[in-house]
Length: 242
Image (cartoon, rainbow, N blue to C red):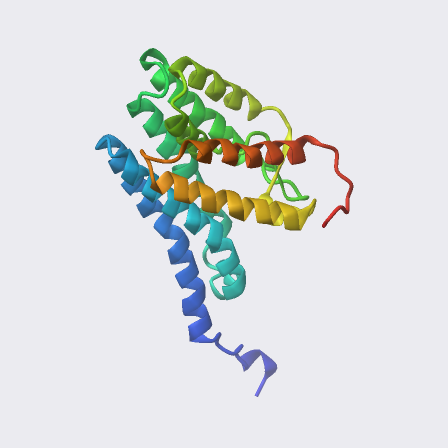
């Protein structure tokens, strides 16, 4: 039989199903984003927080599952990076923008303006060819608008103060600071991962207790935010893993 007539072996159907299952798991982020938006319109910020947490957990685990299932090999017809970007824009940008319009965290005259600025600057941030750099950093403010919105909800700062912070973050989108990608960071890696997991655990616990969260939760979590910012801006050697 000619070599050209020999067909390649079919991939294991269980591996194919697992790979597409991971993509389906990632795609559920659209559902959680929709539910978060509906909760915002209902004024149910407790459920908004729940759905935002679910979407962040999906975003946090789908990469690990994608590597385990080898989706690039067994589900190569799906662009996983594009899917991830679409869902990140929905959950990290659109949901908090809707929240800003509906909630009382920025002054009413500038709510729509603030939300529109977030949508526009994030469109730029997401579409930069080097938005995620080769050395595993985000270039410019990495659209953590959901995190910012949740802090503003919990801290109950004056609306004009919140507006000032949001404008600052919009400006920082265009400032080429390289913010670390915590799960792929190579500088003080073990310490960074430990602090990231601790930050996530304390943050989820505190958010789920809203509106009766302990006051210390926010301030303790800001220690990690400070660590993240310092680690992002300090000069780094090429190999500095711990």
